[in-house]
Image (cartoon, rainbow, N blue to C red; front, side, top):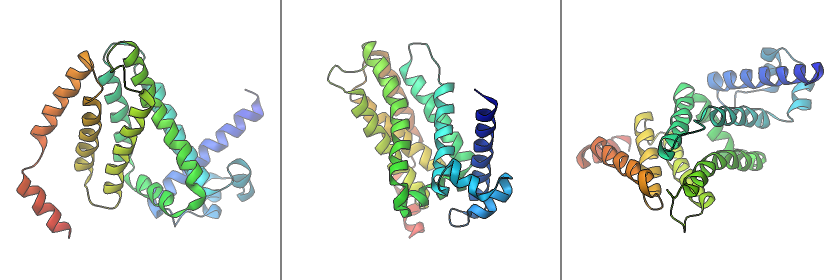
Length: 226
C-alpha cells in the first residue's frame, strides 16, 4: 500500500469512527455532514469524495465490523456450532456495546430508500459468514445432504433480523433480544444439523428452554408495554 493509500485509509477509518460516535449521541437524524467533518478533522467535500453520503459512511463502518468478526472466528476445530456461536457472540457484543448506534442504523434502513442497496450488500456479508461455516459443516458430514448452506444461512439471518427489529422498536429488551435471536437460530439449525453439530444445537435448545420466563410473566410483560 502506497503512502497516499495509507493516508486515505486512515481518513476513512477516522470518519467512520466519528460518524458512529455522533450517531450514538444524536441519532441518525442528528448526523450532519458539516459536524461530521469537524469532528473527523476533514473538509466536507472529502466526506463526499471518500463515501458519497452519510448512509454510506455508516454502512462502511458496519461492513468493517463484519470483517473484524470474520477475521476473529476460529479457523479450525470440528465444532461448527461453537464457530457459529463465536460469530453470534461477537455480533451481540457489538450491539450491546453501542445500542444507540444500531438503533440509528435500523432507523436509517427503514426510512432511507437510498440505503436499500447498501443494506443488501451488508446483509450478504453477514450471510456469507454463516454460509461459510455451514459449508464446512456439510463437507464434514454434519449438515444434511439436502440442506443448501446459503439457503439455511439466509433463513438464519432473517430470523435474527426479526428479533433485531423487535429490539429496535422497544418490544424486546437486550437480554430478551439475545435469547429470542439465539432460540430462533437454533430452531432453524435443529432441522439440517447432523452428528455432533446436532447434539450441540439440541443441548443449547434445552438450555434455552430453561431460561424462558413462565407464560404468565410473558403475558404480563406484553400487557405492560401496551
